[in-house]
Length: 271
Ligand SMILES: Nc1ncnc2c1ncn2[C@@H]1O[C@H](COP(=O)(O)OP(=O)(O)OP(=O)(O)O)[C@@H](O)[C@H]1O
Ligand SMILES: [Mn+2]
Image (tube, rainbow, N blue to C red; front, side):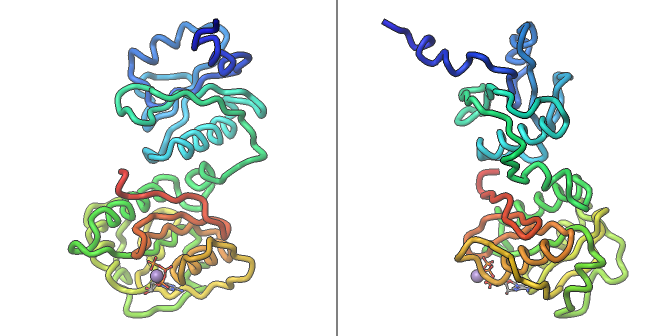
């Protein structure tokens, strides 16, 4: 008769490393005396001072997104090697304790782009993250209780301006405000009722609101069923080096596009 740990034991044989997602301090401590396996922590902050650490820019609610982000980040930082077999411990249902184990092979060939979205965009990672936060907040609350859509084009702003035209006067014309400033969050929410896109510079300066994007759309392949806003978002990221973050008025999801492709889809209600 086999017992459960023997049956599942195969999951752990010949592993090269362990990835713990936001472990508690005591949980992390129990792993530090492991001799032959590297322990990697993936979390919003390196609160335990782990030597091998991947910073999560968002609390990805989808465990697959979390794992993919951490593994692409660990490969990029040379914390793990191509082909490494990793045991990942994550919190699927629990907020407190790791309750789920997955065995994943690190493979650079299957790059989803989710790590590069934050780290290899023209815009600074903190800017990408701040725009996500505004889009998520807007998705949770809507505008005066009604669902609202919004399109943020981040980075490579000069080129984006050349591939777009104004729909109305630009309320940010003479201002020097940046995403992340609390007042800007209020302004972005207010202006999101109106048409068009926000254009944001690499450093996070709001360059313009109300831009109608006119990128070339050839070769852009976005999922069927998404409309003009999403098509424009995808296309502008193929035509320029910008990243686009879109809140859909119709399904309430936040989506990110880069290089003409949909990279990440998240539901604000889960944050
Ligand atoms: N090329 C564009 N540039 C900037 N904004 C655009 C562009 N095309 C559409 N939009 C904006 O998107 C809004 C919604 O358009 P549409 O419904 O076709 O898009 P969608 O992709 O279905 O988005 P949603 O899911 O929010 O409905 C328009 O009212 C307009 O404000
Ligand atoms: Mn629509």
